Image 1 (cartoon, one colour):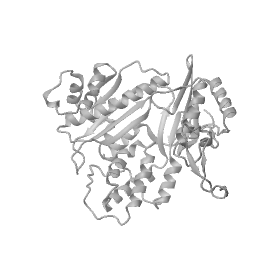
Image 2 (cartoon, rainbow, N blue to C red):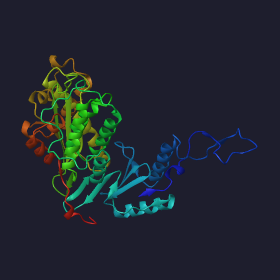
Image 3 (tube, rainbow, N blue to C red):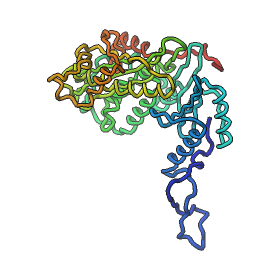
Image 4 (cartoon, one colour):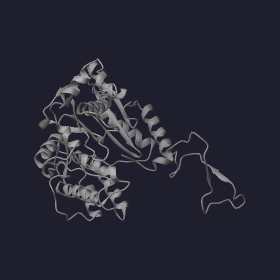
Length: 409
C-alpha cells in the first residue's frame, strides 16, 4: 500500500517557522514569518514526524515495534501473525493472519488516504515473483537500465566478476579525467548487491578507490558490468518448505588487501534454501596471523547472528537451537571454544571475543567445514569459474524461471 501525501500527516513536536511563500506574501507585513502547525515536504523533521504518526497508529492498533528494526511492526494472535514493514510512505503488509491483515488495511484507509497496490511485485527497484518453487527476488529491470545508462547493454558477457586471484592497487595506473562516472557506477552496483550477493566482493573492492580511481579500476568495474550482463536475469530464490533453520558461514582472506595488508572478512547466513544476510568487508586493522583474521571474521558473523536471532524472535519464530557457524580454520574454532585467554590473543581487541561468549552460552556452535565447501570464500577473494559458479549455486542465486511465475501464490 502507498500513503498519499504522507509527510503532510506528521505532527511537529517543536516550534518551526518558515518565510512566507512566493505569491502569498502579506503586503501589510512582508517581514512576518509563518508558524507551521503540521509538517511540510522539504522539512528536515518531516520524515521523523511522519514515522511518529504511523508508529502511533499501528501501536494503537495492537502492533508492536520490533526491537531488531524500528520500521518493522508485528501483531500476534495466538499462532498467527500480521506484519507491517514501513519504508517512508510505502507499506508492505504480510503474514498468515488474513483477518488481521484485512482489518489493518481497512483501518489504514479510514485514517489516511491510501492507495491499494495489490500483491507485492515491485518494491524500490526489487522485483518479487511468487512461483511454484517459492519466492524469487531480482533486479532485472534495474540491471538493464544500469547497463543502458553506462553504454554496456551490448557488451561482451563474461563468466566471473573479477579475474581469479586479482589484486588491485590504489596507485597503479593513470588518473581518470572524470571520476564522477566511476563513483556513479560503483554506487549503482552497490544497490544491485541487494539481490546479487555474488558481486559483493568485487563491488566492495572497487568501492575502496572512490576517492582517487585509476583507469585500471574503471576497467575492473567494466568487467563487473560484463558479468552482470551475462547474468542479467539472476536473483535469489527462497524455496517453499524444507528445513527452515538459521545457519552461517564465515571466512577471511589473510592480508588480502595489497595496499594496507589488512584481511577481508566474509560471512553469509541462510534461512532454509536462500541467503538472507551477507557481508564482504575489509577488516579495520592488520591481523598478525590467519587464525586472528578468521577469529575476527567469526566475531563479526556472531554479531550478525545475534541480530538475526532477535529479528526471528520479534517475528514470533523463536530460535531455540544453537546457530551453526561454519569455519574452515580449526585454530579459530578452538580459540572461540576455549574460555582461557591465550597469550597470543592479548593484542586482539576485547570486542572480538564476543564470539567466544556466544559459543559458551550455546547460542552459536562453530563447526569445521572443508575449504572447498566454504561458501563464504566467495566474499573474500576472486575465484576461478568452477568454484565461483559452485558457491553461487550454494547462495541460492539462480536464473529467473519465467515459465513458473504465477499471478497468485
